[in-house]
Length: 106
Image 1 (cartoon, rainbow, N blue to C red):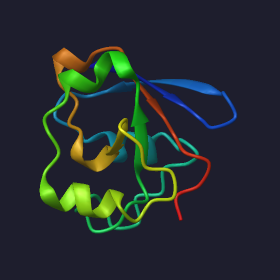
Image 2: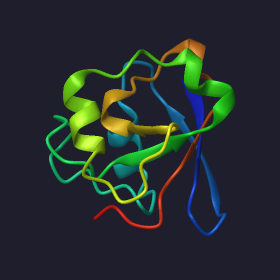
Image 3: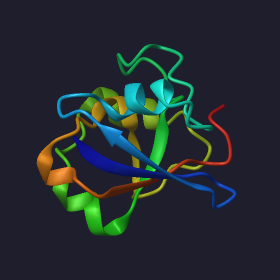
Image 4: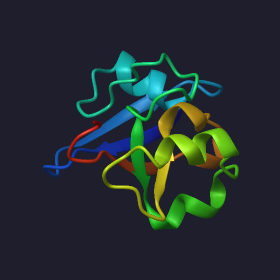
């Protein structure tokens, strides 16, 4: 298990234990993290699991693919820290990862 911290737009922080190999959208939905909808079920066909990755962790993630990049263009608050949680898989190297949820997903 690894620890992932989800911080809501209001500052509320939730530490979630995530099994390695689980995508971080599923982990958030399974643990009722507000601000992560995951409407498409994690197939990168929407942007309702948009998160902002803490700067200290951005270089530790796999690069985003073209589909994820296109989906992020649909968000209102995309920036250099934006990723889709469904495209981030829990690995030992990400233990302690910090993600922030945007004000809204639509």
